[in-house]
Amino acid sequence: MKIYIYKVFSLFLFLFSVFSFSQKFIEKFEIDSITYLHKEIKKKKRIVNFIEATNNENNPKDLIIFIQGSNVTPLISEDEGGKFLIIPFEIKNYLKDNLFLFVSKPFIPIFKNAKDLDENYNIIDKKILYDYQKLNTLNVLLSDIYEIIKKYSKSPNVRNIYIIGHSQGARIAAALNEKKIKKTAILSVNLYGRFQEEISNLRFNNLLNKQYLKDGDAIYSNYKNLKNAVLIGNDENTLSNISYKSFSFPTTISFLVKKQNPVLIVYGGKDVGVSFSNDLARFEFLNNRKDNIFFKVYNKLNHNFEEENEKEKKFYWQEVFEDVIIWLKQ
Image 1 (tube, rainbow, N blue to C red):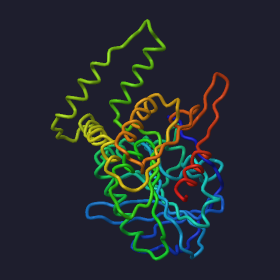
Image 2 (cartoon, one colour):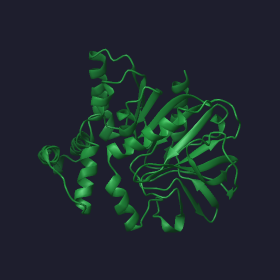
Image 3 (cartoon, one colour):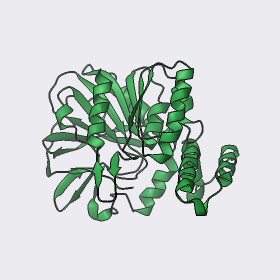
Image 4 (cartoon, rainbow, N blue to C red):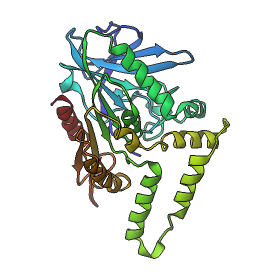
């Protein structure tokens, strides 16, 4: 899956953040006049790494935590043009009143040179990928976000806490059960799970290719087998199944029906694996009078908020991000 990024020159500086409480400061980057602090929080058995973006003004701010999708990328990289942030939107115009956090995945380095990554800036080091896969489960990643919220909620400079999650990150955002979160935005995620996403894609492809119809029975069989499976082992296949199971059961919608705080569900109308199921879920929320759940659909956009045609591909992540910020603050 192609990742779009904003590239800018950077240099290293060493300063301290006004929000530097209960975390260890590791390194500081200046990218496009924005200060990015690499920080870590020590847990019992490992370390949670993240970067904090601030304008260094010591005034109360809203905390916005962005949770990435399933791509295994560092948060910052560097090529011949300099260092750049691997995030699909710009935050420069929102730093006056907001503090942004971008959370790294377990064992995935904050920084990695582009020459050591694939063409989409994914990690290719097999040892790093194996270590990451052992911890790539919903509960582990949830615990990281809880730890961050616990630390930052104690700061007198943090006013409100908002969560934005995309794709796999949206599953994490939906599962967070934290009273300190004021609002949550979940983007590009099938509310019924990854198996439903597979079925939607299969049915759509069957409509396009009527001569090569595929049967969905294997997907239902895999669903049943994985749901009932007791998975033990550290081989790559078992770890992959453990991860897949953790993000499939329970479903994302089962978390959302329990939420009381406002939630915005955002997706592209041309995101085949997501849109059909989420349109159905919308009726379910209406039938259950869940008036804290809101929807925003971009009819022409796909999973990564692109508009595609035969000649070109237009990227609308920034517009989606700005709409989400408006909703969070209203």
